[in-house]
Image 1: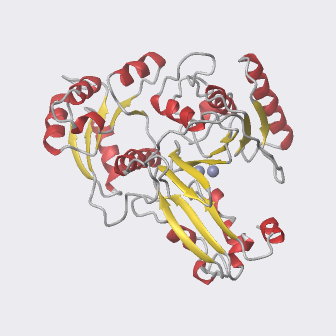
Image 2 (image 1 turned 180 degrees about the vertical axis):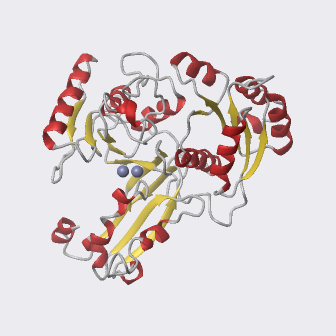
Length: 403
Ligand SMILES: [Zn+2]
Ligand SMILES: [Zn+2]
């Protein structure tokens, strides 16, 4: 903020992309100088979901017990944008937003301008947790096992710079599964698989001192050499300035439009079907989703799940893998082959305690959209469910028409 104001001769006009509103990502906002300057204009973007609006969250942390100036008293003109997944253009920069894996609804941002691409992917945990480093990402020539990890790789694809979550080490990670962060080694694997040019490690564990960060960078560089890669890995540092130059022309793929989040408090409830023969899991999921005002249907076996799905056409289907009668993959196959084309694209998520490589391949081969690995953590379930549903609501952005 200070640097922006020192550089600018006139009030600053800018765009601020916020990945999510966990406190470590917004607590600097009330101290951001340009929002106190008369005449400056700011557009703020963050993932919007059911009942969580950016303006309300920012305003809450500036209430009187915490801060002397309220959000409404800031001198700048501020506009708030609740985003979903997709593409938009701001200030001549093409921005692609994609959901990350975190216990809050979180968007990563890919910025493309002048033939250069930069991706900011914080906070994110690998979807595949089989190996200590959250592996299976496929850096060493093997294919990416988990469809959602493959999606993350595609998001980073060919970027000139990726700034990535690297909170843990591979050694620490097994104790931190489901905390919503990456081991640095997984960040390296993603970047290698995506043929990224430079990787800046960030969001380090607060207890990691500078020497430990240096050691972590060494470990990551060694990993790149062992994979025969040319990726440049370093630790992001305050005051660091990088100049990026264009490589060769790259083709852009059409993306969904992110102009506005589909969800709002007044949106009709989403119909969600949950099938699991374990009453404890069923109750847990019901309790978790109750707070988000979904219309829930439940089943305890595959045949019933199939019957309810055909009758109510849910927006989202959560299926336990192992159930009496038809199991989760069999129900998925039946729905994907259904005469009703609605079931070709509806998100179907498999609930399983088995997240191994073989099982993962088998699940995706049956046509599931994603996995929820047991045991669950409620905030993670809520964030993932919202991400799946928000994707359904988005429209495709037509090439050259993003605005
Ligand atoms: Zn977070
Ligand atoms: Zn964070």
